[in-house]
Image 1 (cartoon, rainbow, N blue to C red):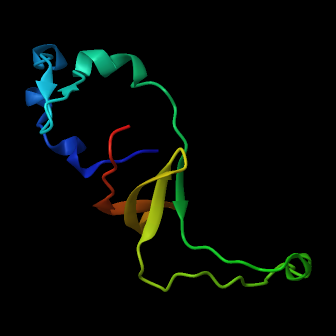
Image 2: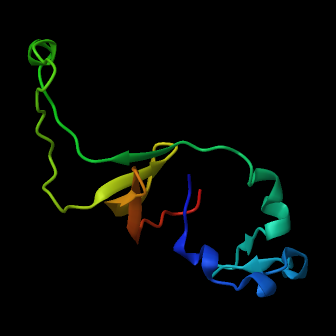
Length: 117
């Protein structure tokens, strides 16, 4: 489940009406035309895979086969270090693990900007 602290940004009686959204094309700093919200509407419901990586480890297959219940695999991250957040195998953010009700969640602390393709 997705939770955004900004969901409460607008009081209920002042919710933003998307029909009033400016859908005119805008240009980025390089003069490229950015797609409008109307143009992007078709992709809003496309599912993506979001993964959070706590850390990584490399071990030999022989040691992997010796693992049993209760075994601990040491990861390459230290306690308190940011975790990586991937969308469809592309690094998009870093964050901290939090508890939301009885589930784990991630608070985004850094958004990774990538070059447009």
